[in-house]
Amino acid sequence: MSATLPRSTATVLRQFYALTKPRVVQLIVFCAFIGMVLAVPGVPTLAQVKLAALASLGVWLVAAAAAAFNCIVEKTIDAKMKRTAWRPTAKGELSDWQTLIFSAVLCGLGSWLLYVWVNALTMWLTFATFVGYAIVYTIFLKPSTPQNIVIGGASGAMPPVLGWSAMTGDVGPEALILFLIIFLWTPPHFWALALYRVEDYRKSGLPMLPVTHGSEYTRLQILLYTGVLAAACMLPFIYGMSSWLYLAVAIGLSAGFCLYGFWLWRDYSDALARKTFRFSLIHLSVLFAALLVDHYLF
Image 1 (cartoon, rainbow, N blue to C red):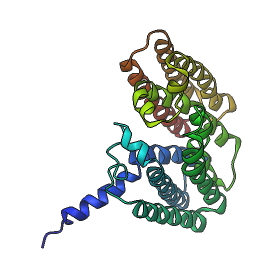
Image 2: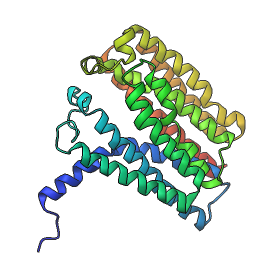
Image 3: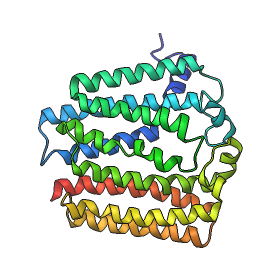
Image 4: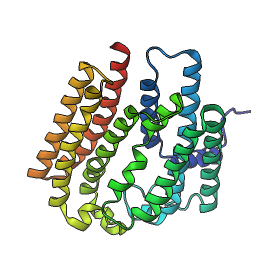
């Protein structure tokens, strides 16, 4: 007998996995993991490593549940956009009930794991993040205001707070600094994407900033946000969370993001907007990786 799954079963599993938006969830768990690491002075004990692993799994499950729920709500919108038309819900390959049950199981399992094996605070904060993204942002904010990314960014900025609370049982100022960095990073990241996908968003009916206020205004906002974000990226060093290694990396990344924002503002092209969007991903990933390395070296 073959040890491989039947093609139809494997296809369905891939479809369910696609609902979890793996790349997005991986970044969420990575940011939560950074919060966990920074919350523990020095080298973690075996018990702390086990706690961090369980917390990461719990956060992954609930974040994946939120992504799946988002796919139900936005299936009609997704079907109109090239970037998302491939999703199983948009193509009708998975029904609303299948997706809803899948989301509920993931959310329930993740919440149970966090409550029983981590702590109640982390469970409630993670569940609140689920509600904030899947319901408040997806159902109410995204279709109603061009500031959806700004307001809804609070949910996306929560992972380091979840990681910190998982290891300490509380929310310290260090976690809030990390929250602020992601909160300020989110608008220029998504607006760069929206600039070169503006026709998709116009067809979908979503009031993204380039649709409602135009390209020039959006580009100015990106430039302003990259400047404020650069200041926020200095806070870990100023507060004493990191050393000169992190500061050097943060200055370089911030300068790069500000330059992309300036170039985008002065001389727009879709290609430059794509590069800005891609750099924003590098910016956040490398910035948090620098915090991780700095934590263990100094």
